[in-house]
Length: 467
Ligand code: SF4
Image (cartoon, rainbow, N blue to C red; front, top):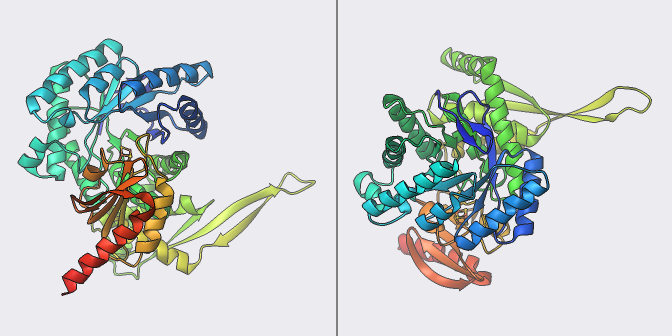
């Protein structure tokens, strides 16, 4: 989809610019030195834009200082303020950050108030040349939209169009839009609806893609590659973020692999000829053909294979696939020569089977394990999210079919875990809330006891259901 260019401190998103890879700090924004160091680490790893949590006016001041220090150290990387709920903070930071991410539907309960605050906000953005991302996640739509359309892809699209129209009416075009979800079908459907409607209305705002709360490890990467890959294959997407419940620096190579694979393969037409060949063989009734990858590491393989097969599975164009991979690693230069030796290792059948199971589940075709929804964490997270998430996964891995969320904060966590059956939500100061669906069953549980209490709740519910 042809989009207009949005400028963020010299960086171009949209138009004919290559896909922009971005990420987000998980430091507390008020910890200025730590945040500066993390921004530098991310920029050195290839991030082109970095987002920081901006909860209040203290964080606005901290962001100003972070920017100053980064420039002093030679890093003029565009900084994005992530604002939730407070329109006053959004307005204040609009003259500080290069870009502000907001969900205007959450500016106020009253739609008319949210609209007038949004109008004030875009005036400040216009005056300061600040870009905006309207980020509408599944699970965090405003009450009015949910009442009208439900928490659905249609509701996400309608909300987006409503705010984009307001930008256009106010002659403000420095806007990027995103409609993220943890469920890859919800996410892909929402963006496709948005693209259709934007084309119909001749709106050309650039699109930010991401699978939110994707979790970590293989599944986090696979889910992201399925959702983002499916949309890039449709020609949708100008900037991407892979959200992982890990060190955020790990997000960058994953995003670069998706963006690089899709851009390169699609540019030479290989992506489509690969897909065509797979489909032709399937239609001809040939036993599922083996597709062979040669990659330099496991993560490249699972990401590229998910980009290739994920969209076909998601769109039900194939029901199964057959893949193998040889990992080729270049060793050190042989002494006395210019040649470097290479080592080839064939990935085991067991590892391929495990990857296939993960991909089938990420594309929502076959559920063989619990579904985990975990946010990447940010400056609002006050506990060790990654460690806790791994413990929860370990203790619940037998609970096939259950949707279990582990969220960093009580401000956005309960909304953004969307349709999870159970949730572990950080409340701050060593306390956790345990949710059943949208209902907080236990509040202020000491962190040390929280996983056991979550497990107990799940077990008690299962026993009641059995009776
Ligand atoms: S849910 Fe997670 S990523 Fe979102 S604001 Fe809270 S801590 Fe940050």
